[in-house]
Length: 107
Image (cartoon, rainbow, N blue to C red; front, side, top):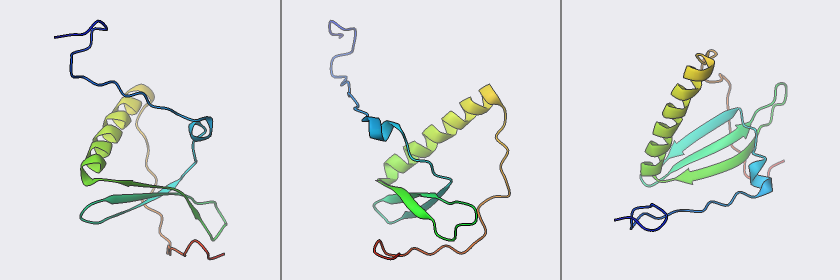
C-alpha cells in the first residue's frame, strides 16, 4: 500500500543535514584501519611530502556490518568512476615507512 506521496507505507525517509563546515570536506591521502570484535576504526590522515609528522584529520568508528556495507558502496562507486573516466592506476601500494601514533598532547 502507498501513501499520498507514492511511498510504500512503512518506508521511512531520512533527512540528512550537511553543515557548510562539513560540506567543505577534509583532504586525506592516507587511511589506517584497525578493528576489534565490535567496531572498525578508520583514521584519515594527511601526509605531506618532506614533513616528518602527519596528523589524523578525522576518525570514523563503524560497526562491522556497516564496514562491510561501506566496502560494497566503495567498490560500486569505483566501478562507476572507472566506467566513466577510465581505470584508476595504482602506485606501488601502501607507503613504506614507519608510522607511530603519539598521544594528542604530544607536540
